[in-house]
Image (cartoon, rainbow, N blue to C red; front, top):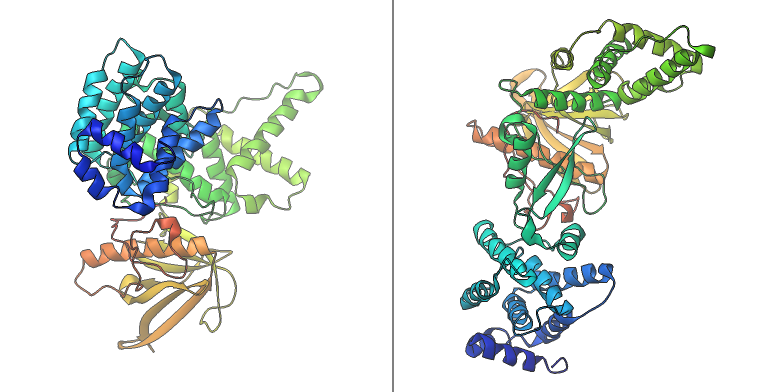
Length: 505
């Protein structure tokens, strides 16, 4: 059977009763014969190593995702291999496990789907192990019919969960932790057909937050390529109706910008906000016990205060400080922290955000860049701050505004060789009726060029939908079905996603 792929197909034809369809649609693809044969082997193989099974399942399902002609074929093989066999056969359990993974990815077409449903209905029985797998597959089929097929193969975590326990016992058989900026996390359950929207809805319900459209928060994942690239959705950030949880997470997010030098604070203000964050995180500062032997209490207090500085105080202000200067800074922090005694965490968060929102570019996304000659700007590092009003160029050290360009003045933008380019029109000699064209080129990391281009495109798309002027010319290329991380950094499309305001995400 393995040596003659046609035999496996024809034997399945008898079970399904659709020989004409299979001969016309599957056997017609002669080049897919090796893949079909390998699928049959993969369904039957037995091996003790669980890592081997994970890799085998991923490879088999990836082949079917890449070659849709094989999707009916693999279901025929599943049905054949799970019929008329000993119920306690280990390979039979493996077939049901692989079927449980497959039904969440894609479903067979036409009468094959009807036959699959009938097959599952015949085996469904909560009293047996096989019957439980069948019931889970029935639930999963309905979920896939409602949410549609997946584009990616199952992860290692999904496969391990199915292999190690029967998914029948859990309505949401998988779970992952979602980490927040304040170093906490929430474990969220899902199944193989869960969409991002459903996942976020569950998460927001469990932690008491509004929908992302209203809160401005988004879900992030590591870039599959391993690059330092942020995949973000532009949302509106509205102060009205903010929940306490949202304000808390936003405060931690802003402070992360402060710590990394992407938010303008002087040394005094930096110490004030550090004390606020310490009160939020740890509550009232405990007074050291002066009678402790050898001054151990004072020493522990100094160590604790220095840890707080490392966590919440700007890094560039701590660089080059001597141990004595750090001790003095810790003492000043303790003094300011003591003044907040009795102040609740919610009140400290309110104070922090009130101060932060006074910056005119609060909510802007900042990128480091360096102008390239010929340029009207000096050839030294600058910040590119993007918000709903336009793109702003800031001095690197002071973060003072050098110049800003509204989106109406932007003609085009995007990757230019290995750099970022933006072409703008500006008034000539202060006369608004006369304009001149200016091209600015900045040296940036390639992943950041892509991120900046997509954010600009999102803001401009929104601006063009809510104003009459013609939007600037987008870069000429389109996605053509490519994944975000597969796009070449030299060509950037205009995104159709919209935004209603600034975001720190």
